[in-house]
Image (cartoon, rainbow, N blue to C red):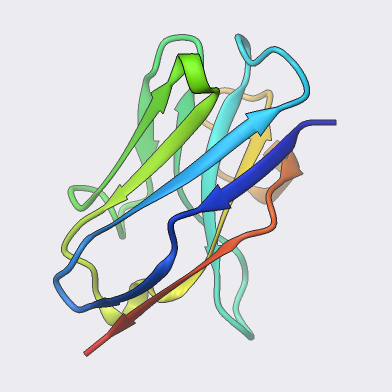
Length: 123
């Protein structure tokens, strides 16, 4: 029901930065959470961080806390994932998602997903 389009992925060296975008459309987002997940082949999709759209409060997985920052642009219905101090283990396909649960951290907390954008961190 909600359309999500990620962009901004690419190749970056260890220690570098990338900013991912997730543009949402299809409905009003005043009462949703938007989350970022990532996945590599053979591994489970893991939670990265989330934001409550209405108030802008954010929360993160321990693995990225202090390095990644989520923000939003209300006018553009877009959420951003600023990734700093990137490590090789951050290499993954990154997905954004929309859910309706506060502080959602599980795949089942989210209903609509984007197509993903590849982030590759080289040593």
